Image 1 (cartoon, rainbow, N blue to C red):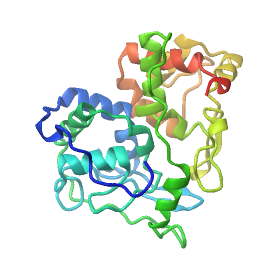
Image 2: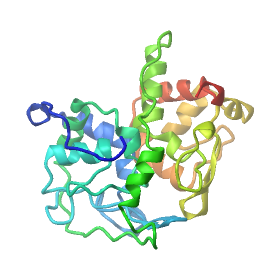
Image 3: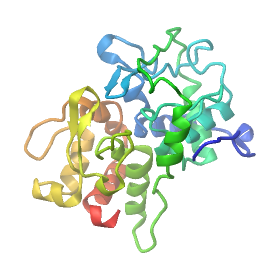
Image 4: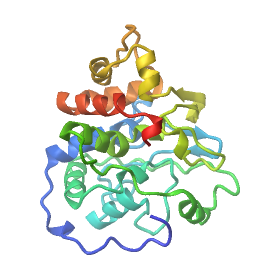
Length: 279
């Protein structure tokens, strides 16, 4: 995961047949639509997302449509795999960690092939991605090599012995594709997630937003259980009858609302049976 990054290792990527439906489902679970679409500004799906205002600058999720000049139309599947799993562009530049690639490092070749097949169906939108607005020294991408060496690690998505298939599926989704820890975990001064604070909440999200703790003990104290959490991930409605707002509303509206009942129950089961002491 640290620098230097090479080409994708030899694989059968070019020969795998991707499944569009599976890829679209995984893209929903992974938050691609929510992040890379600025619907409030009238933007087209996946043509570029709303700006993310951080302490390090303002970052713009890029165009992921099939446009060859401004999107991924000129990419190969190997380019795509390296971007998703390693966070490196086709030109070899590291992506800023506002892109949640660290959570996707465990995607299999088949996952990549499915995602690639789905993205090939996205209509081209000839809209250029906006340049990030980061001041010195954060505009120096070579510094990301040091950041990666210091903070990047593999996602903890491996199944655990003695756990049910549903619980392990929930772990794979929560810790990987759905990247819940990206928002619900405090970050240090370098913008890296603090390992001892996984799921304990974050009061410093982009745009002065916050994400509450999703530790099992805190959720239980707030009246949550597996059923209510799965229902909230489907509808955005909390046990008190309130509704999610801000970024979490987008996560539901463009992501988790499209997941199967089984996957939502798996995510809820994992979250409600997992606490900081187990991380």
